[in-house]
Length: 214
Image (tube, rainbow, N blue to C red; front, top):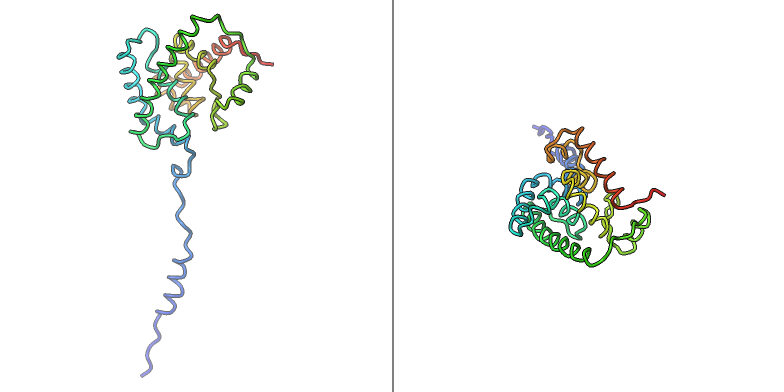
């Protein structure tokens, strides 16, 4: 009696053939995102811890009258964005942030001493300040990030003394690029208030830094 044909050949040629032609799995959005985007998520998840670290460093150095935890975190975030190797985990973030906070406080003290020895700085137009930043390589590699400069840091320091929350909002929104809805939650204000205070902070910086539009 003739054997009944089986589907083995067709199964191997069809099912296995289709399996071999399957497209590789797509990468998740988190895996495909830029390092700066991953840092933004890390900061958002660990923001309360960063504030706690900042508060501890400020209390230890008895600087509560000169700087707030929010403004120290904001300055630390800007320094984080300029690192060649960005942290990838929460422990790495908090460890590096602690180091950068100590440096930020030391730099503030040094700038304060230097300011007492020298007179007031001459106002520099915005375009010259940015060009100078690019020549010295002080800017971030991330094109969307505002350029960081010693004079700009000084301006942000003055902003933080008078309006620490405005500096915090500017940093989270314009440096890290967080959506304003998340910025408002972290800052503890309504979203409309966050927009208003960001604009007020930018206007303060414009006046304090002597930035010229032309």
